[in-house]
Image (cartoon, rainbow, N blue to C red; front, side, top):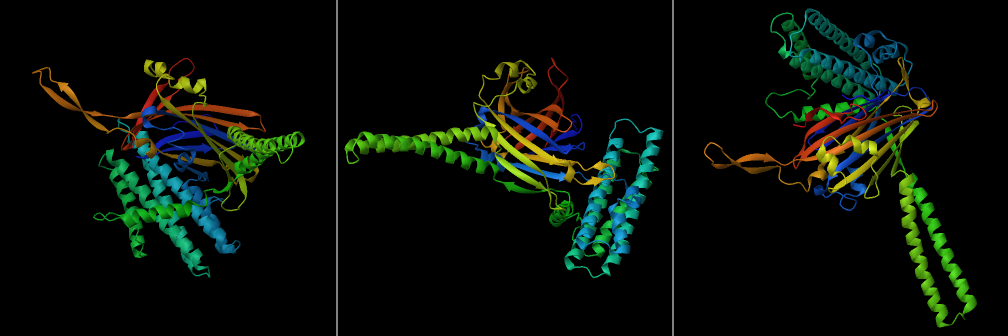
Length: 521
């Protein structure tokens, strides 16, 4: 995980063979208006046949997916059980007092599943990080890991027990059927979360010794997994893994339940035609200027020639031709001016609970000979003589994608830890880049030095796509701006993304160093 200076953190990962993902975690400081800008420079080899004609803006935006949501509230399991801000505690309070709507009850239940998901994910990640080291765990580390596993197992058991007691009590109330169905789906999702989190932890503990206390800890976690599986079978839920089947329905329901429960965090979007309105005004101005010229020519001709003369007729025709060309020329010129200063797409970000607009997202994409790459961005790619010497000489297409998020901190929700941050997920589909690639494998002639026989060995044909990201955070109230730059390389072949390489910036005057790579396989 690569972190830029607070309050913005970035993470790059290969989502699958065809998609690359950037996840940004942004934490506002409390200023009334705050914004951050993401600039992505894509450097594509000329052999991929990518330009403004073969890959227009509409196609680029079709391959870009943006998701903006609130950051999941961070709570430990013991906080879920005891804190006044815990969704579980609030659900129990609603049952006692009856204060609150059914909509709020469903919201708190979904939020409970999101918070529990975060706690289980942090737990599983912690177990993985402690168990993946090559060296054996120290005595202190063993004791800490054992206590964490026991505490998590006991805490999750209590959360499930209290939530299901609450569910049974709510079942006796006269709720709408939609609310009842929603709560049943949340219950199923919570069960799947516990099963998945504990099963992942058991798998990560495979490197630990078979003896105690690890055998007992594995057994305890697997007993919890089996209890949840039996619970779903008892309630006739089809989200149960089958060792012999394809588990299509399991994966389908898990994906649906995740979207259903986490939609309380995702900001909905409302597209605005901001640029279109300005362009219509500019085009009207162009038409007015052209009409003014044509009218002036007509008045001049009327004073000089008789209206029934051939000269007057020809001048009017020529004036109309000039007027038409002036209009089209001004339209093209003003359209380029609008493209330089206006976003291609503007979207309002809406709180899914309150329905209030809390910010906006503006996007634009530029490519072509007129695009200038900043020196700081070009310098990051000068890792060796090949890239240093060939920049500007070999055919290459540069695409610049810009996205600006503007947030009104006054309308953001608050938690006991302060202002709620946002998670910004940007996903790029690279399938169009693969269309004109050569076959991924070829045979190379090879001479065996022992007997001078000629044979063939395997070769791979892959294409590097460099991407430089520049992140800028601006807090106007504090007159403060923070910048960071990240350099990532995708290695592609016709089958998709083969690996991702991330290069760290060691400082001025030094070439970026490679920090490792991740495969899409």
